[in-house]
Amino acid sequence: MANLISHSTTLTQTYGYIEIPIEVKYVILEKKKINSKLIAGFSSLFLNKNEVFVSSPIISQKLGKANNLNTINFSGNLGFDIDFNLNKKLNLNINPMLKTQFNTFSERTNGFKPYLLALYTGIKYQF
Image: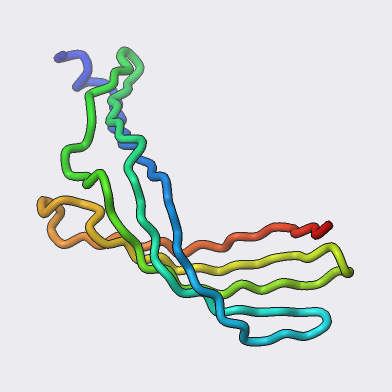
């Protein structure tokens, strides 16, 4: 282990969730070329990945799991759904969203409250 200290070492934590959202959309603007909706709701998040690794030029090893992640947590969601109608069947979608997470970590986190500011985009094709 003494050789490990003399090398550059990286500690990596990876965690992931399965998200189940429940959201309500309220129409703000409905025109021929553009539609927009306000989105509000919450999500239940279920921990499905929790790994901690250490790596250096001489070793790469899984150390185990983080012990401060709750297996179930929740988020409050607020955003906009904007559709640009390219033609009758094809839409370009832009969805900026703010998600504030609750109960993500156990009490050993010094009050850290994670949030996510995201921009989802896509193309919708309607049959």
